[in-house]
Length: 74
Image (tube, rainbow, N blue to C red; front, side, top):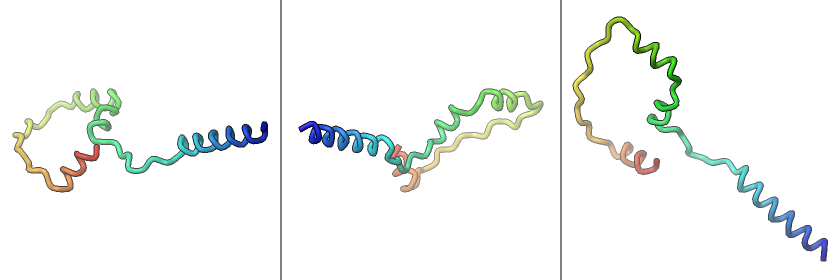
């Protein structure tokens, strides 16, 4: 009886460990996450440049099919 319980517990523990250690695929960070994670030192140093180009006028760009599916995935 004790042997049966021990085997049951070890099976449960093994399956839980496998689930925890299973590799997750397709978890690339988004541009937004990378922007947020950028250290403050680099952004402040970039701001201190003496002369900056004027901002470019924003234009609306139509998303491609690949871009739409990428947005849906994240």
